[in-house]
Length: 384
Figure (tube, rainbow, N blue to C red):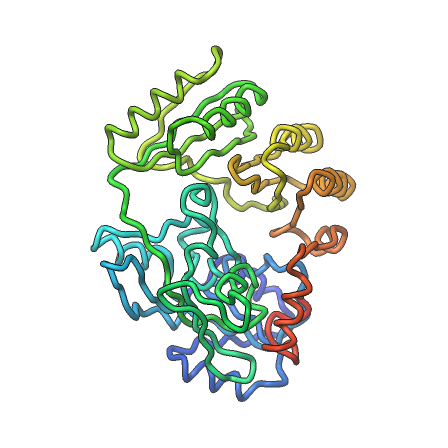
């Protein structure tokens, strides 16, 4: 079973090998957990985002769901599908495409991402503006608890369990509440065409245009402000028929101030930056009204950083090469002052320690659920 390079690099550097189990059935997984109640377990799919947790104690066992990759049900008429957590995004989309459907998410490292990993990290990007976050696209879940018992929440419609919408709480839980084995997903018709319109110009002009686009009678599925080496950009992503996309692109350019340059990219968005040595990946958020001020902070503190901000919701990602701790703390203070946050997803342990991880207003609830579902803190120890 192949795992992602970040995980294999980590494992090869360990003084003592960490065993990896890849069960192929849910009963097999449940039995493994019943047999190792005193051991610390790290759940993952293929490990492309294993290091996103803010901190982790040493683990005794890695449990991969990659052996669980079957399609359980595809109710095409209802636009739902139930799949096992180890199925990769590529495998899922290929199956759904046969019926003209897809699961509209765009996580990082899509070649490695599994459905369970995408849910655990709540990782989606530009498509969030049109289709919602992972919690909005997740209708039901099945998971194995720390005691080896199988539990379910939701179904083909969103349901509350014991007063909590557990499907939403599992989205972004980083494997700390249990091992996800199945997910029922909300699907959408596959778009007939896709295109991205890229504007390049001054950051204030691009931010003003983004604000106009969000208010105008056009329907981009993503509105992203970028800081790149070649200068600030506004990327507008469109889905639909070729005719409708062309009409909307024309409308957008008519809204724009003079002096912007334009480029059309088909059929999909430009690639995201790749992993490389010394690169820190951060996730951040701000109020959408503070987008310009936040990007100007990035320009001032990290002039060489590549930054992607989803203008409609205020969430973003930043790729920063060898940042200083003081500059990161300054950025974190700015973001907190405007109602936002800064999280280091991929960074040296010393940097993660220096920037205290803020779990936000759901922290108390998550700790209560952790105590209920995993009182011995077997899963992802010390995460919450």
